[in-house]
Image (cartoon, rainbow, N blue to C red; front, side, top):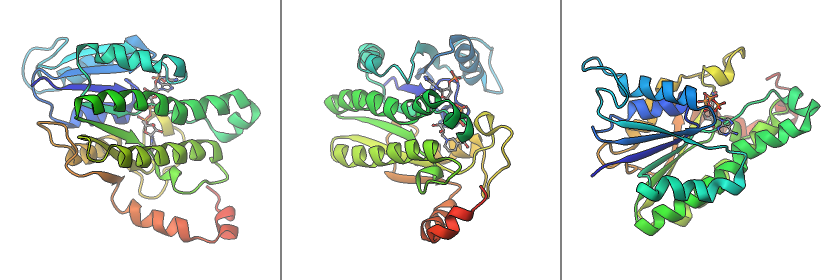
Amino acid sequence: MTLRVLLLGGTSEIGLAIVGALRLPAGTQVILAGRDTQRMESAGKALADASPSGPPGWGGPRGWSVSVARYDATDVASHQAFADSVSAEGVPDLVIAATGLLIPQPLAAADVPQAASMITTNFTGHVTTLLAFAALMRARGSGTIVVLSSVAAIRPRKFNSVYGAAKAGLDAFARGLADELHGTGVSVLLVRPGFVAGRMTEGMAPAPLATTPAAVGAAVAAALDPATLRARRTGVVWVPVPLAGLATVMRLIPRPLWRKLER
Ligand SMILES: NC(=O)c1ccc[n+]([C@@H]2O[C@H](COP(=O)([O-])OP(=O)(O)OC[C@H]3O[C@@H](n4cnc5c(N)ncnc54)[C@H](OP(=O)(O)O)[C@@H]3O)[C@@H](O)[C@H]2O)c1
């Protein structure tokens, strides 16, 4: 069986780390979807060639075929057609929703269309895209959707109310979708990383329990069956695991105190 893997956010450091950690069999078709074709092509080559042996080249020693597709998370009207077109050669077995945008809150407040763009990229665009893929997977009776939520979804902070609200919306959508799809053969894996050191957080001081794209990749890979890409267990994956405990504490902090936190 040829597996098809779609990464939404084809240059995402976390998304690429997940694909790289999956140990996908030779023949797997990987589709990187996003706006920047050139960067996705070089990311695809690096992914396919990331093996210690064998000749380099597109497709690479791993024996995957890697292709790129144009996808803009903010162009919500195009998402059904995008899903149909990606699925014309086969509905993906795995969709990784890693598209994301973090604009510092003061910039978003000073330029409100940027705030809207953050909401559309981090929330609305995922809803429209994943509804379309979920319906196609459901009709086939199988598929896995990985959703990159965040610890920011747990409780909004005064420093990130827009990003946090979008992530909270996405997190709620993913949980509802998982329940809706229960028993259909389609599963949703909700991933809640904490602070991940990388391009998105460049220049920011690491938060407690900071992690890496590789650690998120390994945690997601551990939650999926490498042969079928089916979720071994559904529910929530926290990265790192102790973040689940910290999130419980975050929920319990009284609001007057929460408000005073400096970051
Ligand atoms: N980094 C963290 O600390 C952290 C923590 C928790 C959760 N997350 C979430 O994990 C996911 C991946 O984050 P990351 O760290 O891998 O960030 P990243 O490397 O900056 O990747 C973000 C991806 O989203 C794409 N993107 C942004 N706007 C888009 C649009 N309008 N249309 C299509 N693609 C668009 C970017 O494409 P371009 O290359 O074209 O910009 C890039 O591929 C995000 O959902 C993020 O919110 C991140």
